[in-house]
Image 1 (spheres, rainbow, N blue to C red):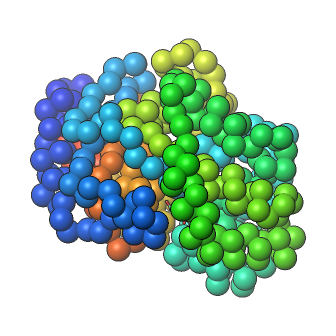
Image 2: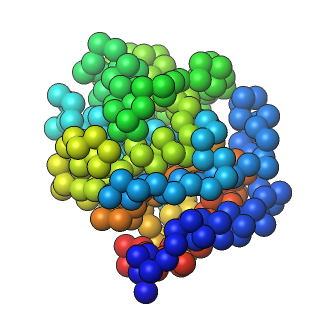
Length: 310
Ligand code: GLU
């Protein structure tokens, strides 16, 4: 049985019901006040089909902080920038098996971050952008708006300021990278851009739409534009599968079987190539930093539709 045999609306209702059962069992991110005070009792999900269809449930139009989901957009931007050729010389493509903000691995591996989705790798990717564009933050925002087909997407400056104030570990990573010769721009400029990309606010509907090009081989079904070559979409999806869920990536692949990227704001963006892009959001996280209810919702979705990459 495939998704075509199902009514996706009723499947989304089931995802929401199953996900709600976990609310109260995780913890919202509390490293900055703007995230710590989020009402944990929230859940939203949006599914966009490559044929242009959309299905939503819950708070799919409530904005949340996309945090590390932004790392997918900056990778897409760096790979089409004048600095593209340097990206894979400066960042690896292997799962890290370490915390997303680890300094130890960076030190022992002499400044070559394992992948673009841990903080060290994402900071290098943002550095590629910062060192090649006069207005890196505007470039990032404009790519996100184009991918989401929405000009209202904004940076939450309160979140960005708190990220900056509490960003000692990211600053340590950036300085370590600089000392190891893997940061080109001024450390503060790269970090400022990094904090702002993390602070982009989007809804589940926006994020799902923005991930459609990864589901549709680089095409955007809503605008008809080609946003990246099909091969690049395939490769980014492969990186999501192997590196997109912090140190919980193996368990997520086992349970859900779909490439995805999570953020500590509680969002998870997922891609079923050739079929759907999905965004689920619920702020409470598990011990590895992935949305607890969101992971469950995606697990139910893949079971009920019989869709995964396997
Ligand atoms: N702003 C967070 C950090 O850099 C992002 C964390 C995340 O979503 O993984 O620590």
